[in-house]
Length: 250
Image (cartoon, rainbow, N blue to C red):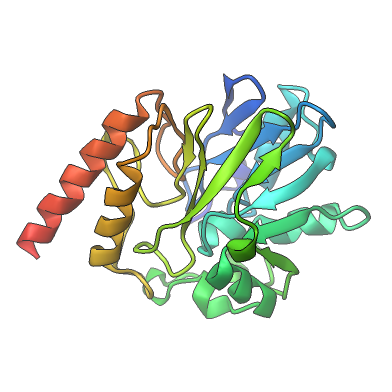
């Protein structure tokens, strides 16, 4: 199921805007990852952990932009699913002498703090941590529910929005000045949107969450899968129309 080649090939990356970098997902149940550089301290913030198999690829991809993974001091998670969090475990082991802080919304933070494997691996996928060579252990994760907005350097002030529907802990990160949206698996490019058939998923909640983000002014859509877009408003509106049409037939 998983290709050993993925352990060594660099994740394809590009600089979206100054100090914001995109690294594309691998084929085997992975996710897009984003790195934001603090323009003051030059520390790095990583958004989503990937599947663990792709960690070496992320590190190699970062090198091409002179980004050192050892400078990651913060990790922000969009939700609790396997393809977004498994990379945390080997990464935290590699950085154990100076571990970054991990941030997630309430339900995701609880799941990772308690090491709830069944919540990380939705039952209908038929996969396990052994397939990724990773063991699930409790992690210290800071609950973003009480944090409100957060700053990354002098350039970025992100808002946190709880956007359930794909999972119980799904959130979006929105930077209104740069018009950046990191929605995890809520919406994708091309009118696509996240699955709602996993435990904790809900088409009604997903539709309401997409309706909400359609009110935001988005230029850069940086989703958890597929490609990124600089026509964020258009992409989100397309996803909203599509999820509404699905709801009419269910």
